[in-house]
Image 1 (cartoon, rainbow, N blue to C red):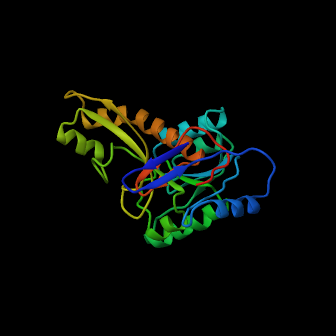
Image 2: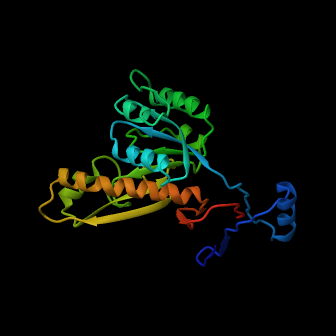
Image 3: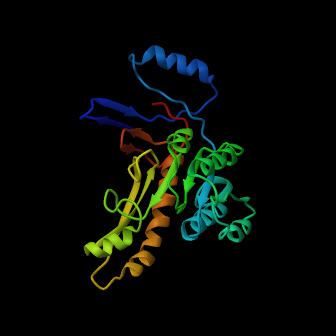
Length: 250
């Protein structure tokens, strides 16, 4: 896969390689052959490990658990971490560790530090926020750059922040959607990976929109994770990617 961003004058290429070779030698050969200033990365194909973070809502978590267990998503869910224990029984039905890291009585910084310490025990490739309803501190985000995937229940950049379905209802919108994005220091403004929408009409209450939106949310999140597992290319806030896996040079 290749892509030319004419606005920035940058060329992106994703290449898959098969065979037996020395990674260090390959990268050295690439450095000799490519123009000065080229950025390149090499990733070994294989099953990716993820940590899922949750609060109380089950639909996105349940979808990922089912797809991982029955072949719809080739990932290892190393553990699920929640700031409440509402979903512990669901997780343990799949023989996956559940860790309660409560935020009660802690500052955001203290809580996020406990989360970091727990996550680092598993060394995941990605941290997936499956309706995790707390804003992460900059220190947490910087610890896992381009590894944190969030699902936001609106078609960003519309309705950033809390209660987007209620915002949508008050504005009388005719479509609602969901957005999966990488997390950065700006709330709900990280590079977008995947989006989708459905139609609604004047008869929908905010609660109706919430119910209808749950299916969109879980589908968008799993699709975004699928794309990220394929190693996608990120240019500022614009994501390029395809549906395959393997080695990638960039």
